[in-house]
Image (cartoon, rainbow, N blue to C red; front, side):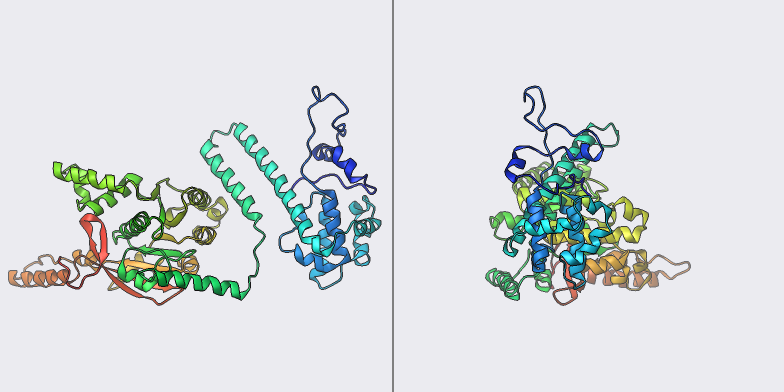
Length: 526
């Protein structure tokens, strides 16, 4: 609750005179200290100017009077105006009483509110029931009630902005050794954004015609594009066919066990989207923001370099490149400089910090796709952590879904699977394998799994049994090699949930040495 101004006078002076002489400082008044003298009684060079919190007594009285005379005026402001938004606490109490009566289906006027005034001693201090008549006399018309409400609300936001500014100054002056400047800046950005979005009170219902026009616009955009997509292309033909691209405001979960290639697939999708944006001059693809909580930015860039240059990533790490390969790598790096791909590898980010950084990138570079690697490494708030891991993950997934809707971009969040998937045969993942699956499955628009049967088959290579005939051992080994050959360099992307379309499997090629996925070719070469 913001600090309130002193109660309004029962017999206010002329408004013009009030504008010329500022009111006393409300903080000193509430502490019972001597009220400061009005500005102008002393020489301005020797006396500092006195500033009061932004407020408008006449607008508050006019709004309350309008509602008392015609309760329909309440409809124009009830969606965004709350009792705490009034500068004068007593006005907020009156507004709260009016709202309760109207919500119960009763009439709110001088008669129905009289009992409320009679039993509230604090309201008696400003004139009791007689003050209702004063409010009615200051009433604005029903037509102007909405505008008066916006004035009251705008002044509330300005008071909150002043409080935030003072809080930022005090925290910066503070001597807490753990309060680093970067964390304070992120906290200030978050608070400012929350205050800014709190002022977005133009929400609510929209007519069906508007919604239909928007839906037709999306369909028309998909029709005009060669790929027939309404969303951002993943760069994989069959995935785009099943999903229709990555749609704005969607939360897409990409899950799998370790070594399945989750990060590789996410990196491939991110690069494809960023390159499409660059090549089409912004008409297709998207500016990508990649939050890598597990790998460093250098490791992630190394994967993309390996994929694009066809140079094995392990040779890059071990320094085994020939001069020609190094020259090729440098040329590829030069080509990638202009791709709008941004990486944040800060570990253990909170949802709040992630959202702040994503909003900043949206403002600066028109962010179009967010990827988070991976969900379980995000830190929840202190409250959610104390409530248990399930509650913490629920807060994280809700935060990511909210972020997707706020910025109107698709968000891909990678997720680990529980070990129980490997207790089945075959170990194909399903929705119940998601860690803390209730919240993840509920909040996601798309849930997909990466599954590589080759990974498990390689670990089933037969060993020589005691006293086994050599011929039988070679026979078993030959069968294993034949089975491995049928699935080598192949992966399945399992779409287990899709809010906007069908589920199903998509087969992809996977080249491990280049950490690269590609479209499946039935006649591919190993």
